[in-house]
Image (cartoon, rainbow over all chains, first blue to last red; front, side):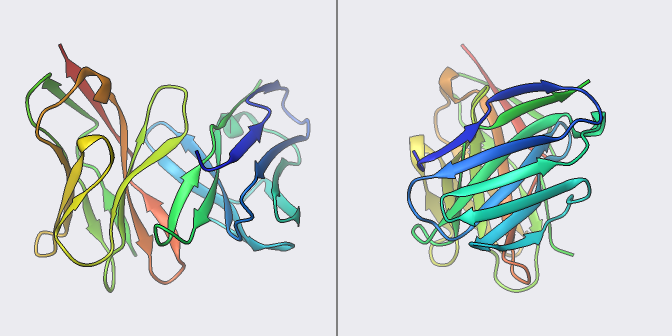
Length: 113
Length: 113
């Protein structure tokens, strides 16, 4: 258990609406990540954070934004959801030990109709 | 570009038989390699990693992985499969230039009683 929770766990929304997913950690780790999982693609990095207010883009960042105002919370926002953003979203943290290992939250299943 | 490949979408094995899930990689420099497992409707769980040292790495749940530099492979193995090992397995490599993880597309392991 890496002390990571994600909310909501499931969400159905309509095209064009804004959506915010929350990742919360309890162990004060510096690095946090957002991935999406799609069949045939494995996990792809959306955005990551290396500290409060420090974020950077990943492989598939278009259409997504993130914010990190506190160490424990990393928010992923879809400004205007599209059907192509239907996916399972995972948050991860990176622990120092074992070295450079990422641990994942339980995921959020998002459906955009 | 650094990458990882899992050439098999699915591996079927009978309970009690040895199992192998294949992974090959392409990186510049020394590779950091990881295996994760995902059970249905769950997040990814860390199994094991290779950074340096012995080519045979032991991990959780009786799994091990063999690092082969000449073949650029990091195959996951278990001497005797259990039905409960049935899950989706992901290989990942750390991109040394960005410090990000690059995931394979996943291999579904099905263990039959």
